[in-house]
Image (cartoon, rainbow, N blue to C red; front, side):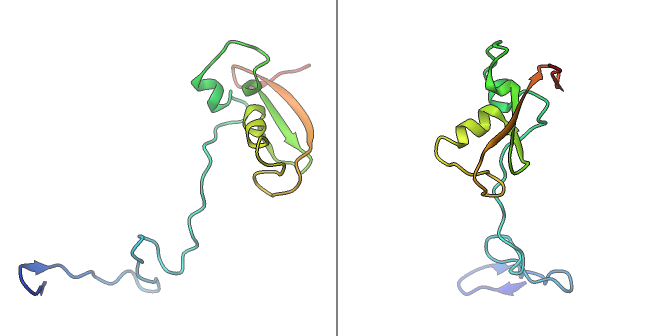
Amino acid sequence: MVARPGGGPRATQAPGPPGRERATGAGRRRDAPPPRPRARSNNLYEPSIEYQANPTGDADHPGLSIAWGSCGHVFHLDCIQRWHKTRSVCPLCNKEWDFSKIEKILPGGTPSVD
């Protein structure tokens, strides 16, 4: 304990494990990369989070379909449609988004067979 001017004791911070930088004020190590924002997601063969929150019973709802981009990334159709209201690129790789395939899923969590 170290005495503080004008009052009671203050605990000192012990150094971190060997070989690691001490944490910065934000709780991250100085050598750590900045945190990446995480999108909410669930299994692609389950209805989208939006559909689960507001189920309509409509078999053609975009939350019951998955979409592949020409880049190979896959998203729920309602999610990628909402993304494309303001952007025209893939959310993961920033390549221009072109739909290559759209597939309906069954509410039980399996792809439909057409």
